Amino acid sequence: MAQPTIDQALTDTGPITADLGMILTRAARRFGAKTALIAGDRAFTYRELDELSDRAAGGMHALGVRPGDRVSLYSPNRWEWVVAYHAALRLGAVVNPVNVMLTPEEVAFVLNDCGAAVIFTSGPKAETILSVTRTVPTLRRVISFDPGGRRDHLLRGTAQPRRESTGGRQAGGGGPVDHRVHIRHYRSSQGRDGIRRRADHVRDDAGRSVPPGAGLSSLRICAVGGQTMPAAKMAEWEHRSGVPLLELWGMTEIGGAGTSNCSYMPNVHGSIGFALPGAEARIAALADPDVTLPDGEPGELMIRGPLVMLGYYGNEQATRATIEPDGWMHTGDIATRSCRAPSDSCRTCRRPQPAR
Image 1 (spheres, rainbow, N blue to C red):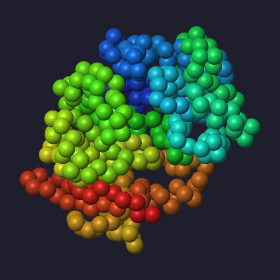
Image 2: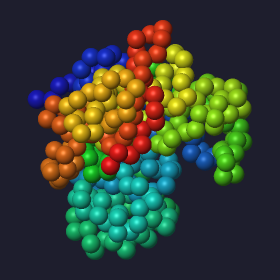
Image 3: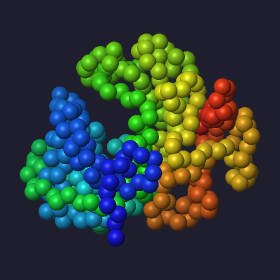
Image 4: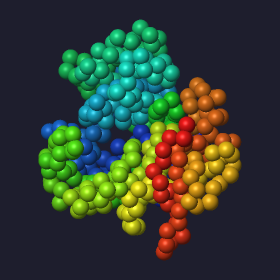
């Protein structure tokens, strides 16, 4: 029997039994009319997003989406993506976000690999999907977010009864990630201040304009990840913005971040910080992953804990090659570790580089 969902799991450090599909509903109960999402010139409260997701879940259910079905999302960022994501989780479906940079052949591989039953898309991406539908036998529905697509039908659907369960997963990069991983990420982020407001007409190095908002004075902290950030560039941004820039590290196989600098400790440029709560990190010898190297010696960054994926879907051989029997996962990244006074806490002080 499934354990009951409890709010305490979102704030304490004990066992997690909350349902990812109910996070938006619980946020709506707590924050109601507060702004949850700004997309272009539209703003949505927590309550509005919850209601839209409920209606979309009802529409998806009417179209035959059932618990365990794979629901893919292949669209640039937009508010409908967020609604579909939460609606699918609310139904107990498995969410499969697809990188919009993939070629049609790569998209077809992803959809076949996960056994997608439904896919949400928009704009030119819809044409890509229509060109590969015949090669994906499991695909039953293609739903467009654009006017004239299926969006209006979904949002007119009858609200789906709310489920209280421990089900729901997200599949990314071929590796299913249990929904509790995302709840852990949410809880870990509570220890790091976030950007609460938008910047006022800021342009990046490519000249793209950030949507206007409340101004840089509202920034409290910024984070960067996904690619090595030169220490000089980090210092320049901090000087221009007046706020700290914290570097983090993560990968698809752990559902997001695995290490991060902390807002309440000295920020070290060039460091990816500490392992997040509930995770362990160590530097292993390249020749023998069972050997943990001393501080200062470069080796492979390995991570263990509940953030680690369940395994590569349908590929047991790759899973065994990536996750050791004792739970340590190979990241393929090179890093070093060092301890800094006055604390005894250790940082991975070199940005990882691919090892294989």
